[in-house]
Structures are given as C-alpha cells and as structure tokens.
Image (cartoon, rainbow, N blue to C red; front, side, top):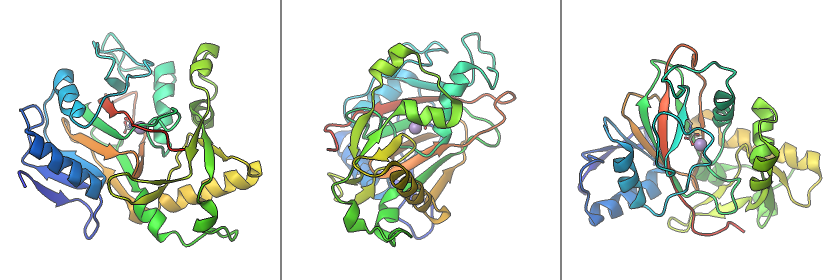
Length: 293
Ligand code: OGA
Ligand code: MN
C-alpha cells in the first residue's frame, strides 16, 4: 500500500486514519483504488492536516464518482462551486450568525442521525467533509456503523425479525426530518422540489456485499405499515444502530478531512457554542448511481 491506516477504534474494522496521503497533490489511480478498498473496509476515513481549497477538494472527490450539486441553502463565504455544500455558522460578512438565524436552523438538521441525501430519489454514495474552521470543543461529527448494527441486531422487542424487514420500503423526506428539530422551514417552492422519496429499508453495499438498515432522520415511515408501528420500529432500530459500541466520534482539528460511505454509516454533527466559536465546513458529495428500490 502507498499509505498506512491506523484504526481509530481498537479491534474494529470501522474508522481509520489514513497516513501518508496529501490530498492536494496528484494521486495516481492505483492509490485511489486502494483508498476505495480502504473505505469499503473502514467506512470512515480520516486525513489529518489537509490544507486544501475548494478546487483541490473537488478534484480529489471527483475521482470517486460524479458530484452532487449543493441544495444551495448556504452559499456564503465566497463559495462559487455548486459542488461545495457549505455548512457554517458564519455569514457573508464573516460574522458569526445568531443561533436562531434561518441558515443556522437549516444546518441544525445535521445534528440528527442521518445518511446524506437519503431524501433524494438517488441518494449519495460518499461524503467528504473538510473542517476549514472548527470550534475548540463540541461540534464533533459522530458516525455509527450500520453494517455492524445490522449484523448483530437481535430482533425487535415487538417480535419483528430481520427476515420480516426484507423488501420493505420507507418514505424519506427532509421536510419531515427538519420539522423534528427546527420546525417548518421550507417555502412552498422548496417543498415542491423536495418531495418524499422511497428507499429500501435494507440495503446491500454493491462493492462489499454487506447489508445495513438504511434509516436516519429523513426516514419517516414504512410503506404499508400502521404509522405508529412503523415509527416505533424506526425509533427502535435507530437507537440500536447508534449504540455507543458502534460509534466513532470525530473530534475535529483544523484542516481535518473526513470521508464516509453513506451506504454503510449514519452520522450526525454535535452541537457546539455556535454564537461563540466559528465552525466552517465544506462538503463534497459523491452522487449515487442507482435508486435503492
Ligand atoms: C454533513 C453533516 C455534520 C457536521 O456535512 O453531511 O451532516 O458535523 N455534517 O457538520
Ligand atoms: Mn450529513
């Protein structure tokens, strides 16, 4: 291998620090293949001290597939590339926003466990997040290994077993998930372009063959099930998947770059003192290639 990987959780094939890669430098295709294999194994890869600009982040990210365009709810800070999703508590004048600012409220949806773009007809494969400015404490990004959670799930307290969940389809909606935390923040136009979509409840990763429960905050209900029964199942599965033993919490240092596979993990961004400390993150998102159902 052209780099080494330091596992971040003892004894688990989940979350690894990549040592020996400069993301801004030219990287040959065999190294990209090795990174793809490593991501298949660890699902979360951490690269420390990557002082990159948006062009360099895009060039690196595109090697993993074509990139999604940002929804455009936060286009501040001189970001010009539609491939960059900016997640920041800083306004166009470089000042910290108030906690109640509408963009801060939009971003607060990230503090619920989710899988990126599961509210889109074809959800994202991989996300790559660059910590341009990070707070001294709080604001960790947490990742839960959905593969391990699936493998070890003992079945529901209500008697539902894994085999009963094969083939089920869930409706996912960002209108629903934002309502859970910050209320009804979308305009009628937004609601029109962000209509609910259908996703498989159990997914198999095309490269690794491993299965997961494909849930997260956008997941609203199981099609064809009684609504309260499906909410209960989603809540129970989500709390199983996010048990501490399945979780890697990334404590950000400035210029960390973290890459994860949305087909294998759930993630969330923890709160921090957002009226005191700046937090500016730039994300690129590798688009999915096929619907899950
Ligand atoms: C994201 C996300 C969480 C964070 O970028 O997709 O959920 O910690 N971010 O900023
Ligand atoms: Mn996210």
